[in-house]
Length: 167
Image (cartoon, rainbow, N blue to C red; front, side):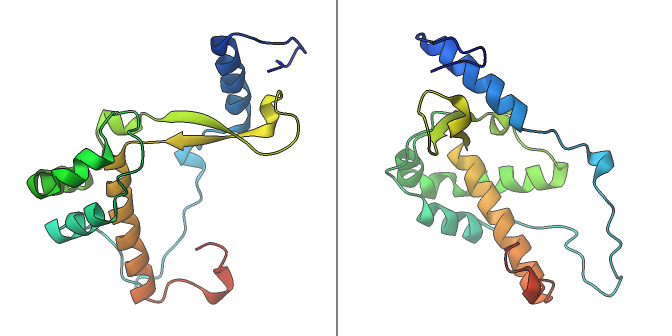
């Protein structure tokens, strides 16, 4: 790995710090105050709340892949699959509490970022893209939320045919 000064790096810690510096440069933090407000016609139904059911959680567990590795929380998808019948109710409660409180568990803010090679010289950080690996449980929660949002948008015909790339 070569750093921005052109020095050759050998130590894993130095290389990870160089990736961190580069990835930090290409990300920008969204300021909520700068997100434009979109006025919505009152005739369009709002998705004001969402209730997650045990069936929704059960369906997500069925889609888990046992061959995936544990992420920052060290909870193996294989373990989640094996104990899914016992944890569906607690997870349903946790997911609904997260929606109600409009917050998620602190552990779900943690991710392992791995550099994935794109092309070019392998010793340059700019030839890699960061991939964020998050908790399997957080992925389940996100999947349920995404499905509910897409169902709402589709059922009220809120997707424009000209915005196929958005989907």
